[in-house]
Image (cartoon, rainbow, N blue to C red):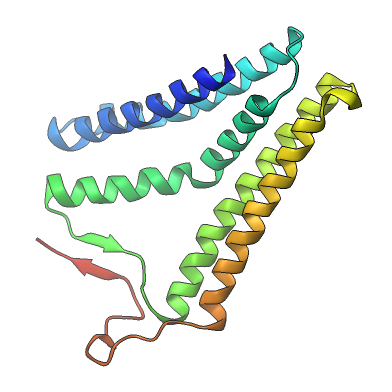
Length: 191
């Protein structure tokens, strides 16, 4: 049941996102579009409640419950950035606004990658907190080993992503000679 709900939440995320952007840019109804985009966190609340309900009704804690915690953590850490990125692309394609891209070179790129990593770190913290709450909720150490292993998975992902972000500080990519003036900041690409 939990896996199906995770899939439904992911599909719901993209449906709400497409509907929200469609209302904002195609139908020129920005308030309705914003309202639809603001409904996205409700999906994670539904998943959280359903996971807790499943555990409360005596379900054996397994990988699906851990995956639900990681999914919610990822959404908290990166959901806003994903919506913002897609909104920028929709505004560019459908409304003719300039496309804002992340910096590609130097310390500006390193700062950008660090901000993205902080989203992963936030996701790991949220997932760990949810998993710990589930472990306490179940209350039986012999039944929660799969939940404990998902905590390790969350921190491995954050650690690997942190090492990748660190490489942008240690070996910053240099702008090509003909692109040196634009490389440090954000690029604007028009139609």
